[in-house]
Length: 420
Ligand code: 5AD
Ligand code: SF4
Image (cartoon, rainbow, N blue to C red; front, side, top):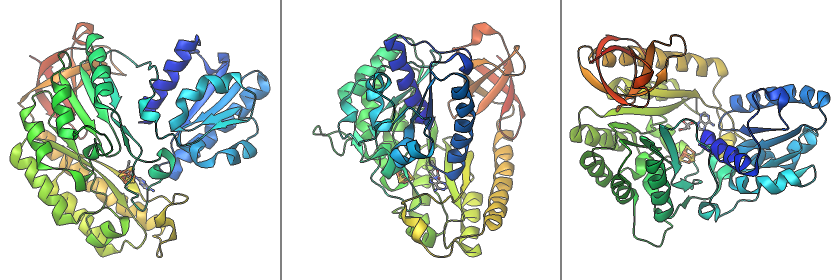
């Protein structure tokens, strides 16, 4: 979502006549688009900002701006702490960028804007193959650990006609893969006057000629419906990959997290997905060491991973976020306990990933080719519909096309193959 916001920031710069600097030393303005989902992201930001202080001393005309969730959360406090920041703006205020550039120093734009979804902001997308399209903004779920509802504001769905028009123009530009973006795509349409939900939206987007693949992130398990599974099964362009964040396998922890489902309710949805399509890849997000998580609770998460056998996981140590409910909970877990739990989970998942990839050896898969690999120009890299990375010997002519590749070697996090 942040990378997509950066495309909007770049789009405004482009329209105003600012080009991208080849080297940050040549820049007139530097924008740090920040994430505050975990403390680590914030630490990265402060270390980048430290480097920019020196750049500003060398070139006093350089403007430094901070965008995104840290700007939203910290506001004027950030300007006080780092007086060399010229201006800052939150995720709902990207459209104010021009006036901020022209205005005096120390300006902030961090008001939540419930109408942000109706604004039309130009976008400068990287490459011409894959595009993100926002379908909703904000989040109303208030999971106890999460800062997003505070930084990105209330949930708002974008009007269907705006989404349709954007995908149509992407199709005309030749984009082949569209990823629909929202914090909780399954509640799309709740605040719209038209009677439309996410499966209906998928069907509408599917009618647009051009794109070969449609993906979406993120689904909230509580709102994940059988109607959605039917739409995914019926619509050939919708890829065979679902990202369904579990967060924890223990019902006690899920309740404390305010997730709104039990493990068995979640598992029933996974079963529903696999009954509809046994080849559907499933990935998830996990948090270890949520306040109060006991060894036993953690074992439930471990067992959940062993039982479900995800194709991939994103696992994180719980990180304290200002203003969230979890911060006030008792029994915070020691950092070293969190680390050892994380290591155990990742080790388990590595063996599952390898085993799942091994099954693909000898099979032929469809790969949408992203480009040459970073290390070898003769090796092309791309993704299967199930979102697995495939490397194969090919040439520039393959880039941007879908090719068939026979898998010859499974690796932990990728597959090696031969082009058919
Ligand atoms: N600590 C650790 N992980 C978090 N996430 C969100 N907030 C936190 C936090 N405070 C994770 C969740 C979410 C993913 C995007 O980031 O797993 O699904
Ligand atoms: Fe955060 Fe929960 Fe909303 Fe996801 S659904 S953005 S984890 S509050």
